[in-house]
Length: 144
Image (cartoon, rainbow, N blue to C red; front, side):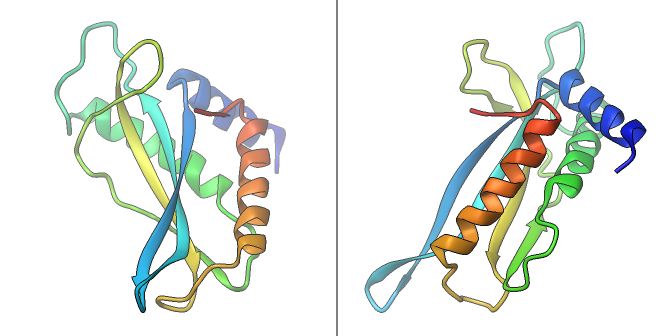
């Protein structure tokens, strides 16, 4: 990757004070809880000097576009059995859990077994999460 591209992505991450959260996903199968994947949420603040409580405005849409650009770059590079889906803009503001409660835009990425309803192996999931964490760390994006 070019240094210009990496610098651009770092500036987006800094501009929106981006962080990420990881949530395991499960489905009931034959009365048992089976891990089917994981959701990785990229969370970023809408950049404005005034209080922002208007979900779906052009600033929110631009924030989503910036976060999606980071998500597309950070997704797994070459996992045969795993698929990564980046969800569409949900037109909602989320409240951050950090010290400064701030309205955030969230880009959700679902990492799952490529075969429908298939169980994801812990090893594959951990390897992908490790790779994604490293890629996000290159941009200064931290786990919350």
